[in-house]
Length: 220
Image (cartoon, rainbow, N blue to C red; front, side):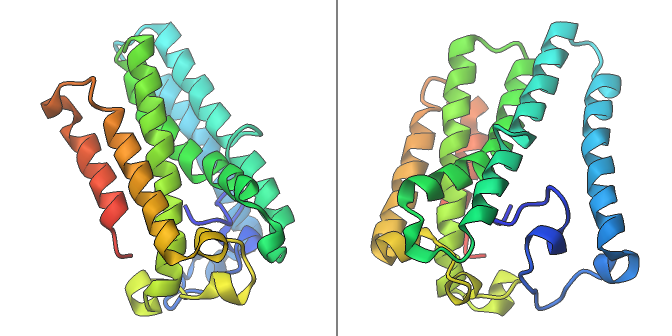
């Protein structure tokens, strides 16, 4: 979920090298990688429509709409466009733009992941709204932490080239706010996310609470 997205291919939209690159692009080429991504996206809708059993049709349609929104102009694609247009702009990209990018990419995909289960289960509107807010918060926190790790962890721990954001003048939370304030932002987002789960039974919410804690404390 790194900025650079996967709407086309890793190489087409994110040239970040990795210590152990996948051989898929080397073997099949960027053109086939892009087509594979398109096929997988189409398959997601096929799977939702064909494999969801025992659920009212209106709930399945709501999930289709949710997934489509998360990857379309109001989600991943919209965020990716702004991200591409912001490359190399450094600190001229403000906090609002940076948040827009993250919310429409990482956060949008996590939001769909969380909300779709609630929609299929027939959750009340108020419960869906709380889960949506939870997912947005952990999604944004994930990216804030990712920005922090890029300058605090070595490449062998991250599994990708560390320090690339700084080298390519990408705007990040640390570049705008500094490390300490970025950590504080991540902590607030995790606390906000967990607060959205207070309305649910603790046992039922336990996996989502654990996910929030993991995102806030991960080291890679």
